[in-house]
Image (cartoon, rainbow, N blue to C red; front, top):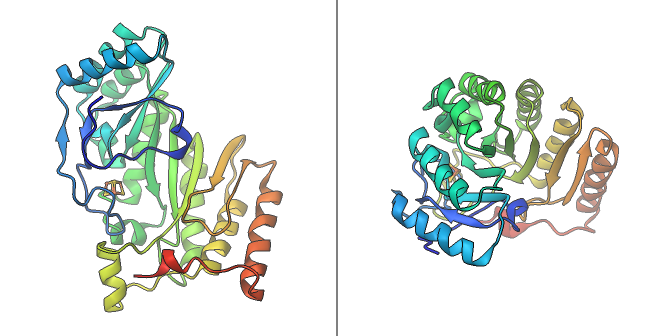
Length: 292
Ligand code: SF4
């Protein structure tokens, strides 16, 4: 199998075979992100992709799910994605779900007809870096889309029948703005109906634009307690039925997951316990995450 540069996939896809279709991230400009900083964006050739699929065939008799890497694989044109799907279906006719990371701007660049064709081509469960529903945070983090586009593009996925799994960042608005961020984000999710929610905490990673802003005093990171309070507000304001909420990313102070809304109370109890432990010194703050 050919893999180039840094490879990331959602932890929940740990058991899903990976297939490289791009390298790096076409956007590569989010202020907090260093994931693909050293990787040049490139698109994999169909011949190489087919050769990798044939290699996969030597490992798996059947495949029902596959995850296309890398950072924003949905940036590929609808026709290229359709060709990749054709190769996969040719060699693995049982395949049901072709999943990948997608940004809001990747969706924006496709027509309604494209999206319907891609759903037909078994592309589903897009992991979308929604991050926030709070417009100033989206702009500040240079996500490449604004809030109106997030509402519109996620709704277009709904119309096409493509499930979208939302990655969110608590603390992304900075200190003092967590509650506003949680409320605006809940509003976006209540309207756009994610298939799943996956939370990480805003880290200040060395080499990121955000770390330079922190050094210069332009951005004040939220404290861990602020982020936990923000997470409680988010859970309280979300009005979703039968949606899994995962807060088990390594950056998160309180690690848990549950199904909304039946586990809301339990999840909030876990967070409150962690807040209490931090306040009384029973829990150690994740200094590493917050240090420059
Ligand atoms: S957060 Fe996602 S879209 Fe933004 S630079 Fe990193 S990989 Fe690319």
